[in-house]
Image 1 (cartoon, rainbow, N blue to C red):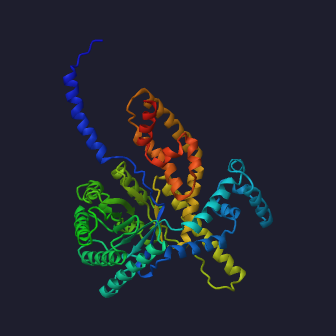
Image 2 (image 1 turned 30 degrees about the horizontal axis):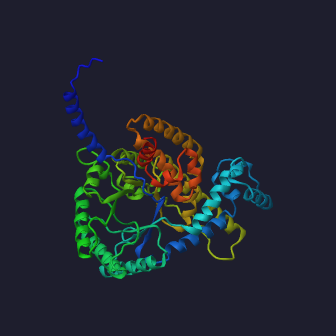
Image 3 (image 1 turned 180 degrees about the vertical axis):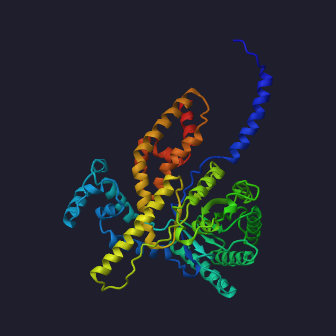
Length: 478
């Protein structure tokens, strides 16, 4: 076969292209297979205790059982799929639940009630076992501007409670603090709180941090604020004998200037680069961002179009970088207006209507985030936790069959490539499909057995890496 291009010329050009390709892959490695929490609960530092997350689960479960004592009631409130086919009488609901309890999962999936039944029972289990996935001890908006002596004392107290929580095993799987921003008027206060908190915590724990500990730096607008945090981390690590790179951070998208700078460019990638690899996530601040866009308080909600614009700009800027993205919070709390044990029928109805309305709003906000590829959001009150999990489980379970078909087809196509010895260039796409199942597995929506339907083995799933799966299959066929 006659060719026009000499091998030496071809190799030189492809080698040059290889350098550029590898540089691109380093910048955009694709989605991380690491666990991403489905939410972050922000709570005032002055209120944090070692068992806060446990108590939040108890409150959330009581809220759910008070205002939706069974799966049929929850389905009607949220209008889950097939809710119109569910019974309304308590006895009929109990009989249906008993019948579903006795079925296998395969049998239940054929029933109209399967989705509502599954979502509700998974919610109850989650609130009993791991109600809070991520908690941020808040020294910013959730704490406010207080005298320096009070914030100093609170930083010591909060660090002490974290140390107790570490010892007792009562902390959430992910935890961190949010300090004040590095604006000119608050930068010194933010640094001092960070120093006091970490120094106290490490002293009490013998130099150990909680698992998945992170520092949230809010209201970032320029790369220099991130760079300053990195240099502070280096000083703290050296002073406390921590391995270099131990401390990690997050940033917040809270101002229009972080979406578009004075030159009409999106500065998010420059801000992430300024963290020198330490920034792992970017969280959206709904209310500060909408305020910065001139939206009045009445209309500052997650459903406002300016939020979607910011989300899409953020996803475009940081897509493929491995930075976790989080949506903001719903500010309507599902708490009834009337308190006390001896409420009238009218008062109980007002409470129920108020909670159900807030539930629907929170459910729709979270669902909207998930549909737009934002798998994490904020919660501000334990009463919001049931709807966080209702929306999350409904999303994953409703999307399961389509996702199985897509990943199964993709795995089969990848297998053909590995068998022919080709390099499979779409491993990043495969990772994205795999991550749907990993996210669903991490939050309790599905089990490992349900991922096996994709054609992957449990051993392959546990690698959490589509590239490693391909490598493993190639070695077996070599």
